[in-house]
Image 1 (cartoon, helix red, strand yellow):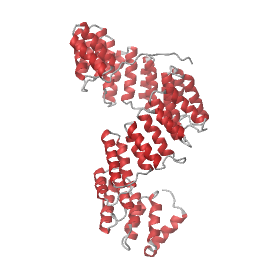
Image 2 (cartoon, rainbow, N blue to C red; image 1 turned 180 degrees about the vertical axis):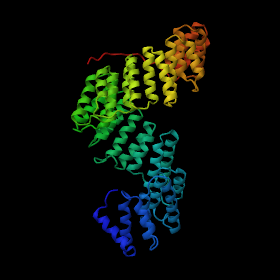
Image 3 (cartoon, rainbow, N blue to C red; image 1 turned 90 degrees about the vertical axis):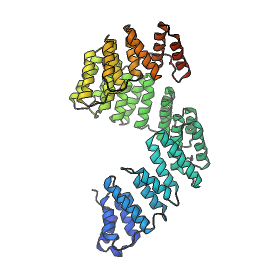
Image 4 (cartoon, rainbow, N blue to C red; image 1 turned 45 degrees about the horizontal axis):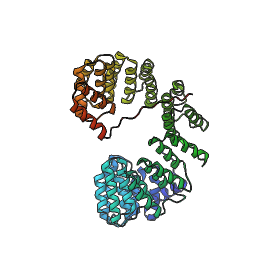
Length: 513
């Protein structure tokens, strides 16, 4: 527990010596000062020193709500404070107290039903009241939550409550189209929220436009900002990367430093590394690596993991292993998984299995991502027995729930080695409902090893699901065409042509180190 500042300690001593002689505003300020670092003291002082002698006001109860810690005990205390405020007639008279209780109900363990009931019963709701609920809905990240956000915005307009900067920033992530985003953008401009000293709304606009596939509008917002900071530039770099404009992401990263002289942070470095990885630009990865070392940013776990992933996917496994073996930072399960996956995509299955065994020996518990990485490495290298043993180990010994992708790897592993019947037996034995990737792997194996019966089973299963990779559906079409089942061929072709599945044109390039 931190020691109290001298001024707070003197006020506390006065309260303990003569509670009745201390003015209520002084008592309230003491509760607020103690709330941040000494959570148990405000409630104790309220019960023992204030409540027996005088009537508290709304500010007193607001200070108490901010001092309550999270947990079940806080839930009981919040109910008592709510009831006490109702009995004193303070709740409906003071919106600040109502907002404090609203935030308290949404803290863990959250009780959104009680929070919404309190919100609906408030006679005078403020922008802060709406912002509290909107932020809660935004954190849930679902379609229903987004609709709930817009419902609150409409209700806010009916209450003639003007949205503020926090409202706009909280609603922008719920925009699913450029049209709704531009409406909010226009409102923010008219309300003067995009000024020279307001970075948050403008940065949120940049992120929103990138998310709705309009990086051109995001760049227009960024270019129009009188002052830019690292958050706005990082949003632009990440937006270009998410939209597949990888060179644009690299150019924006360079402009952040060269034009505005803004030092990139760790998030910006990780964002640009994703673009560098997509471009297979090893020199760019080295530059980011060197920059991180010079700026004393190297050693942060997420950045080191991104460097391993970038080097491995660009083909520079020796650089990836050098970063991985560096003992100046603490590796997590993602670090091991990135290095194992790097070995796997380059066909180095033996090295991937050896590193997986080293990970288990070091006491790191594998997850489904690491399991998928080592299984895919075994699949590419043809390590059938090793792959089956690893699958059984991570499922039975380490309690990892098998995923569809992991099952597809085992099917592919058995199928490539010619054990197509065993692959089908594995599908039947698993408790997981086989999806398109599983049936697609079985179809490829049955075509390779000319197993007509399993070909028909896999193709029918893919048709029944009506989804999967375009290449799988093309293979289904070819299987049916070889059997002259033209009605099924036409059905599959219509699914490919009319649906969202489009086969991407293959491309490749070589970028020397």
